[in-house]
Amino acid sequence: MGQSEHEEILQSINKYSQVFNAMVQDILSKQATDDAKISNVASIFDPNKLISLMSDKVEIDSAKLLQSQISFMEKQSALWQQASMAMMGEAAQPVITEPRSDRRFGHDEWQENPVFNYLKQAYLLNSQMIENIVDAMDFKDVKTADQIKFYTRQYINSVSPTNYVLTNPEVCEDILKSNGESILKGMQNFMEDLEKSPLEAFKITQTDPDAFTVGENLATTPGEVIYKNELIELIHYHPTVEHTNELPFLFVPPFINKYYVLDLDEQKSAVKALLDAGNDVFMISWVNPDAELADTDFTDYMKKGPIAALDAVCAIAKAKQVNLTGFCVGGTLSSVTTAYLRSKGDNRIASLTLLTTLLDFSEPGEIGNYLSEEMLPMIENNADIKGIFDGRILGLSFSLLRENSLFWSFFIKNYLQGKDPAPFDILYWNSDSTNIPAACYKQYLRNTYWENKLKDPNAWVIDGVGIDLSNIDVPVYFLATMADHIVLWKSAYQGLQYVSGDKRFVLAGSGHLAGVINPINGGKYPHWLNNNLPNDAEEWFSGATEHAGSWWNDWHTWLDQKSSKHTKALKPGSHKDYPTLYPAPGKYVLKRL
Image 1 (cartoon, rainbow, N blue to C red):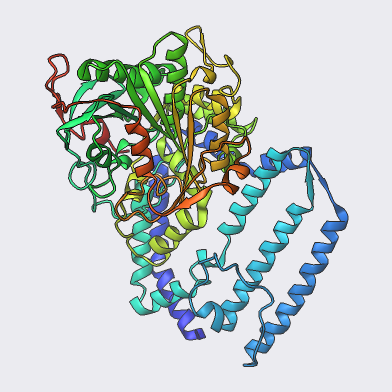
Image 2 (image 1 turned 120 degrees about the vertical axis):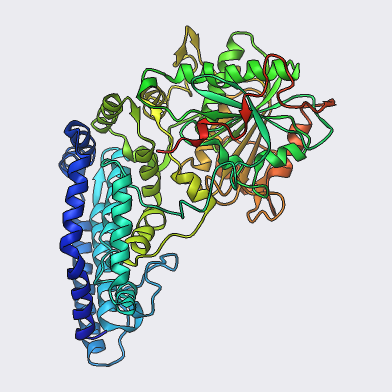
């Protein structure tokens, strides 16, 4: 790429930059209506706090640091030599190469063009140098070390040459081919996202927002809303068989997300698969709360969520017991609910399925890096100011756990290349954010991620009832996923030691969502089974057997064993006390932020 081509690119950028900057400032001034909110959230990521954290809790290994600096200077010298040879048309050897898993440098120019090849290698060397500096630090506690490494990684990936117009050959190529139209389209994409985003949680569009409509091509399994309160709508699905298992099935999705990840389409619907397997299925659909529900706490979510739904399901099905399933946060809520009811002598829950659920938060994964003694009260204060914890902040936080694939890749395609994202149902669901009432968010955060009370019997008390997970004496099915970055599978495995009923642990391939939504027909990922349940997760895995395809068949068989009898399938809305209010997917799920 010659000088004249770079001048064309600069002219295209300058052509739009002044107007673009003015428009951005106008949007920001309109959004900045509450300085307290913005400064509060910004202070969470104040670099001075990170510096203070490091100075208080770290010692430097001088010898290791010196050796890394010497190695860095030697490699930089070698890079200059090789780059000079390449500039003169001579064959040059790379001083450093990216890992095979790094997809950022796939364009041919990163290898063939001496300038871009140098930029890439210089970036990789500097990244390595920064990582070596961190490795030379001896932290006084593991949490601090993890936080420093996490934020260091965020910084390194943010300054990649792929993230800038003039240092990304693919972006430069697009500008030249489109006569600057690509960069204009990228600016327009950015403006649209900026207008839709709160200042504290900038949200990149990850999929075509017009490609999906809930109730039309998502959440299409026929059903009826037969009960509602201020927190939930309860959906009863139409049966697909004449006779169903005697024990009805109740789904508790996470209240931080919309329920329809479990009912994406007919092929990938966990709901449809359960119906076809002969189950009478009910689903909780959570409200997307606003500030009016600010004082609604975790206890309210338990009582007006699974307990209220349990009352309705048992009445409708004339059943004494129900098979309960919780997903992620919904699994934690279901476990607390089961322990709570068992302590009160309520035996209506016959079995419990926990999908990618934490009971022991000792090892919460990278989510724990967002929490510190200084950050936690700031996060809570932000929720108090708004009355809710904005679901878009949570979405951004999860995206930054996989920043290159879930943030920077879209930043490049949407804004630098001016491309529109492709339709993708799971990413559409992921962008359909759900708020959390301030009281619930604070109570949940402190009792789980911060104080880890569930692992200690009776440490968490609800209405005078101590929550003791050992009271869960019903059969429990644990499902974790191999590449889960939100609920680490080994951490999920630790939950086995706290419940006292018969247990089954299954490990599925892929991640937090794709590993769970892995249909029987066409499921891409395997699963691992081992009937022995040693205390150590690695020991369990070493004795596990890999099975091709979805774990759903194993789960359905396990559920069938809990229902020895069958009954005539129920028509939703036929119970006099629970008539049809309106069709599924209901109204709560349709509210978008």
